Image (cartoon, rainbow, N blue to C red; front, side, top):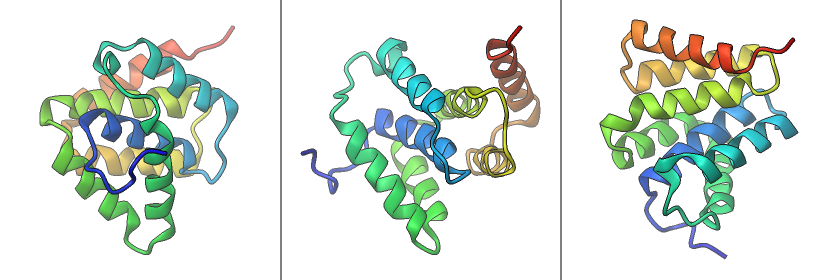
Length: 140
């Protein structure tokens, strides 16, 4: 098993954001898990990622969500361990996971808003990222 006390890598942070969005409505859907897996398997930012860390990262997110100030602690970890040039990437991945099942629930929308705020993303950049996620996940 992976050491859950090890510092988070930038890739762990990206995975944590995706898992947090998936869990934000208290129901992790198969389409969201498949999206996370697809992203981790195919995006260049995960080229050297040890996928065995995914479970430990998920457990860390769930543990933090169980705490009173867990969301604040999660964002502190992300800001501490994710290089700022990947903040927009984190938001894009969060949007893709949120849109994976074809609808964004209230919990997901609130968390995406919080991510925008915590990562200090310009509203216009966030809107472009959201539009791209919407376009990628439309159905016939």
